[in-house]
Image 1 (tube, one colour):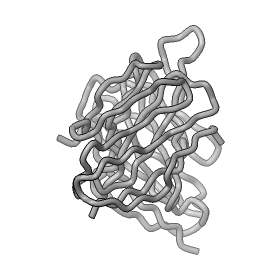
Image 2 (cartoon, chains in turn yellow, green; image 1 turned 60 degrees about the vertical axis):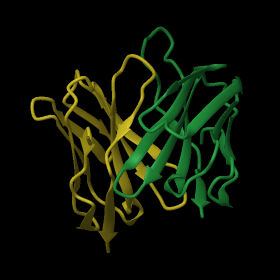
Image 3 (cartoon, chains in turn orange, yellow; image 1 turned 180 degrees about the vertical axis):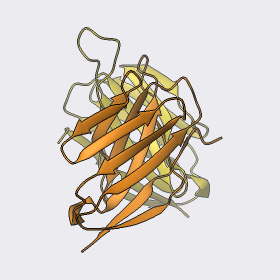
Image 4 (cartoon, chains in turn red, green; image 1 turned 45 degrees about the vertical axis):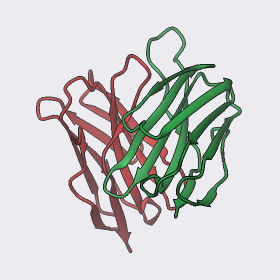
Length: 113
Length: 117
């Protein structure tokens, strides 16, 4: 039972354009959502997060949108740069407690020159 | 970068042998986690710790045990390795936000690639 789903295994975007990565979740107890970026042979690195009391959080080129009624979140990267090529994981948890993260399967983003 | 190291970084072992992976942190964080990453599954939580000698199971704990005798070290043991435990294992750490029930962001180590033949 996949509680967090990233239905696009891969995404290819031209440099300078917007990259949109999507994530859906099924567990309505989740109230904290994160995006991690992962390069090969490295651990995931934190990118941006959002709590369920917000519907948008922005940090530089990265914006995360949360639609609680649809149980959907998305990560927008604009403008996309070659260094953004990586695997992106969305994750969810409950704020209170041990923050046991539940991850999606990941989306491999490739930025083409 | 968060001070998290994992050892070994790579290991090849045979079915039925015991294996211990080590996670070491220099951040004095209370919470530590073990995840495994497999194609098509993302990362899945194996076990976590909320203090010295305090541990609990995660989503995929069968076949794994953990120990935490010091704040800085969290050990993951495969008592009798199986081929299904071939994976990349990541350790993560987190800490409480002062005055809050919330935890800060989890930071991950570089990973250990384990192959069980």
